[in-house]
Image (cartoon, rainbow, N blue to C red; front, side):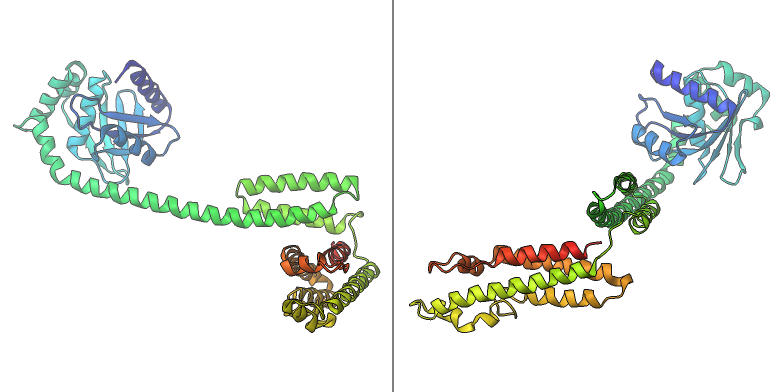
Length: 391
């Protein structure tokens, strides 16, 4: 380890003397490179484990919680208990960094699976003064082994490396699947909350301008609602919408629908429809003698069918508006907002059709010198109607 890494490790060890911290260890497959040992008071052991494995490229590893008292280092591991060979490798690594401890290893249930206190006092003294190579030989001798440390480790790894590699692959796949699932859930929630924000902002926009105090309160609440949506906080978003609706419903300056004004707007729409029909009647009279058969076909329909019906110039869109208007008039107060939204949608569809239909443009800009106006009078009447029903 370089001086900076060793300094960080020693600082973490000092923290472990005050309170237990999380750890992860993995021996390096390259004998010329240092092993990896990380200690941290807050990061979870599994996160530390991924970090050390990335450094060593070795599935052989252990992680959990470590506490240090004087010269005793107690490791309580999670998951599969470490092998004796892995514990020895960690001791060897610590000694190589001039960090000498008596190591005690526990499993998840707190059962002891290794303790240096089981060795003799002579070996305890030698652990402090001997170098890493001598320490390795002494440990193997005290265990009654005749092979070298590397040979023993190869024996213990032969089956365990395969198992741990498979476990690591499974864990990585599970982590990837969980992350993908969470991303999909977050995206669905974001779309839902964004739609709620858009609808609420539209209602707030209609209410602004009538009362300065109401404007200020609505803008503040709308900003809070945006923050809740950005954080994907569904509970806070719902609470924010509720606050805004209460402001709109109970504030003294909230607008009320005037039924008389709505009736006037409806009459205006009907009047403009009749005016357009009259204009078309004049045009159609001229078309009856036109040499182009297509013009005579338009004339054959007559002004009474020019605007209403699926085969009309307006393709039935005006029929839908009139039907939705009738539904709005007969809707109870608690359902009127929903019906009004449907009416606004059908009005928007009609306006879109009038602005894009080639036949309407041809009728308004006909080469016969007959003045015909369809789009503007109907659009103006629709606008006035929509303003009257808006809450």
